[in-house]
Image 1 (tube, rainbow, N blue to C red):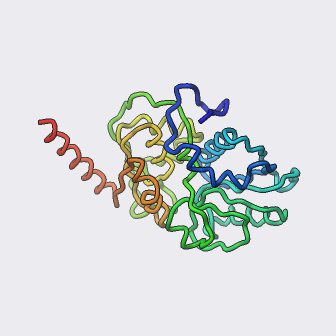
Image 2 (image 1 turned 90 degrees about the vertical axis):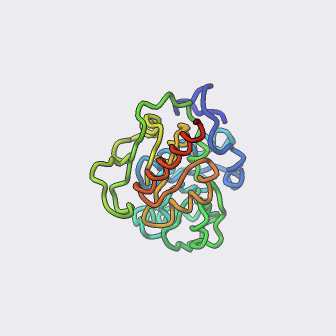
Image 3 (image 1 turned 180 degrees about the vertical axis):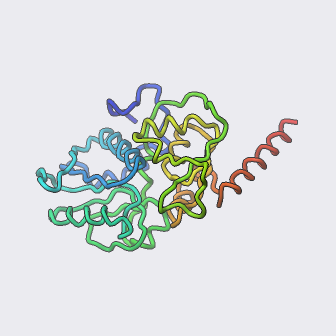
Length: 268
């Protein structure tokens, strides 16, 4: 995949976790059209998705610009960025989509998760994991765009284990006082990928920090959040990319210990 200037890529880039062919059906409705991009409100994980989108659009020759809903440019189709904001749980993003619909142009929803039903008449709705298809029956399954991100190869890890957990409303279970939240530590995709690269092993319930760890070639265990997103993303895509899954930090640590014992026995 060609790297967009300024994104941090160069000729030494890692191969993306998923190549451009995995996203051909997402790009197809946009080919030859003037595209206005509407950015969802969210944390740094959304910036990873947006960076991957800019690379994919450049690779496929998509003409696009950020769309100001208060003073919209002349475009043929609107794309609403990927993430996990479909439904009414993210009220601010629901309201942004309402404003976009007021322009009376076709709207393509880039790969998203649904927290509840949103049966509004969008032109195309791409859904990034199997469980959300039950909440949007005309949805089209497509990978999270961050899985197509191209990025330079990571250097060696400097710490063995990183346990980085969300501290917001989407966490499941008790708050781990000593854990840090990647979304609070990182403001940019580069910072997120650099943080993930520090560790040889990662345990996290932040989906896009797990994806950043996979991009860095690290051993990653994803934990559940408080709705279906993480579990379904793991079952739909991430397990096939080498990501592990555990129900809790304690269970993940037990998995790591068991794998270490197996490795020692195999080496004996």
